[in-house]
Image (cartoon, rainbow, N blue to C red; front, side, top):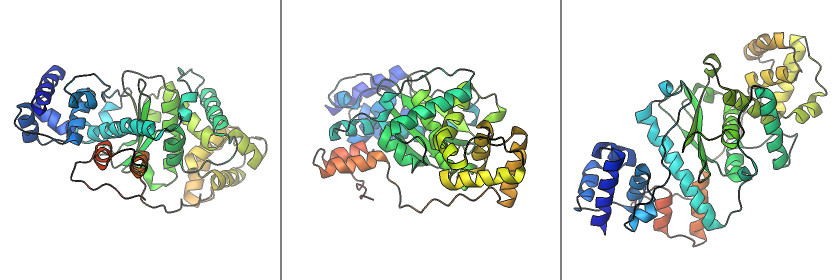
Length: 375
């Protein structure tokens, strides 16, 4: 059977247009091993075959049975201008792995009998020029479904994974100008978000909350573009002709983290504060409760009419320089975080729903890799 599978791999690789070297690199399989396998002179591990199948855009289970069935592949679609900032050779494999893990997460959820995620309650919408109104409205809709329309949200990575089945990864990307990215495949419904730990924004621990809220907005509401819809976010996008969808995601993140009704309970009704000192006090109070960075806090209070717009830059500058804008408490230390796939694979293993070998395959491990311990 392995000879027949090797021949199928060779035929499909030629159809797709990959060289041996390209397929070996993308699938993380030694070149010599791949060449021998295609010639029927050797074997590869089940996990490696899964990766080969994924890169070639075919179903791994069908390939193991000697059949070719098409499946989604991570063909990446970049927002206009973003490709120049993306270091494809170094970072594409990390994006592909995130997507692979999101696909595996969907399979494990089925094994565990998990109910549909909250993501199924939302439909994508084409953005309109009224980006702030759109973003605020959509954030209120999500808050309503979560059952909390006023309070601070907890751990955002946990929220995305447990409530929306969005796999969250933290990766040190070589594309240091990129803060975060998200991807989704509309046919299967899989989705993932990646936080770039090498981004300058990670120097402020609370920016991860903003970036994950932002990516959730893209995942829930951006209409898909192509098989894989991928959005790459950069800190300096404001100067590059940001599209309506990006501005909407920013408004969505601000309102999701600092809901209007929550601000009203904390600060009272908006009153267009015109003094810098008083504005800084408002910023400090909001940051203490909602755990948000200075810029997004000030900008949202301006947009929500708590601070007059011509004070915006001065308040941000003084808050940073003097600390008058409050210091949101440092996030509590947490143990090394396992993503949702790892946690649920280990749960399925504990419940004897899968074998140790299948657990390794789902976690993209080789037969010689140790399974992770529960954290």
